[in-house]
Length: 221
Image (cartoon, rainbow, N blue to C red; front, top):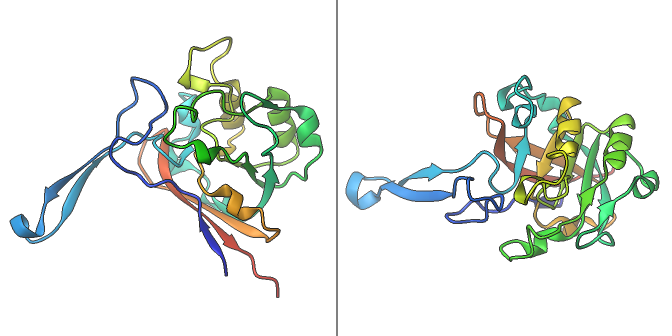
């Protein structure tokens, strides 16, 4: 059975959202075997660092927090969409999503994870039109996963033009789970069927959480 780890490692000074105000990740030793008989670390990390899941509270003050999310949506058979043809600065249109099968769990592969830790990662990554997102919701999508930083154009990463993060708000108002910053997604383009497992930390009152995200091959009987 094939299992693909779709998560980036959490490490000190990793890229974080591309904004000056987001907490930098810091991982430092608190104790060592030599000093206290065991290795123990302090981890300082923002709620949207690396591979993570958004909760509605991220953009909606009355939205659900991480501990309130429906865990039944976090695991399920996933439809994998190859959107590698939609590249730098381009948008997923309504016409593009009309061509695909829409199921409860959707994973969109742009191959963008290959730009991780480069200046290009936050620079004009592919994103979704609002019409495309509305269509996916209307067709029954419950979890939206992608290997880009956001379903929105630039999102909070650059100067906002017009409404701030409209796709985030649309998805979260409909309680669609959003999983961003996936890694290794191109390994899933092998024709096999996969179950997606997306597990955030159960952090009380948080707007999001780093998540360990795996794709596990579904074995045919």
